[in-house]
Length: 159
Image (cartoon, rainbow, N blue to C red; front, side, top):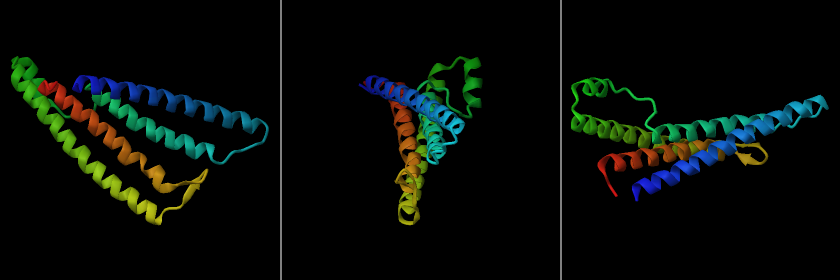
């Protein structure tokens, strides 16, 4: 069950990142072509910036799923040489649990920031309020947290 959920999340992330990249490419090229005709759509560049921001979080979830995320794991490098797989597995679970705690703190803090932005922010472009744009952070961190949680479940052998 956990592996199926992780696989499903992986597919969602891959489709989402492809859509983000193609959207960024399309709008960037559109902006360049429109400049040839001395036409400028002011909302394209902020949209592309926010798509890059969203793609970074999606990429982070993909890196988490393939265990390629940034981590400080000097102990696991040492344990690989000692050949203690059980201890290495426990260390991996501990590192993932610590990562999950950090992600949970970031989700909470970014949610609170988005709520404040809804109160004091303004409409940015295309009628989109800045609170929704800042909402990319808690949604992205939640997605990464969910991937970390599924990785913990996989390491624990939860079915």
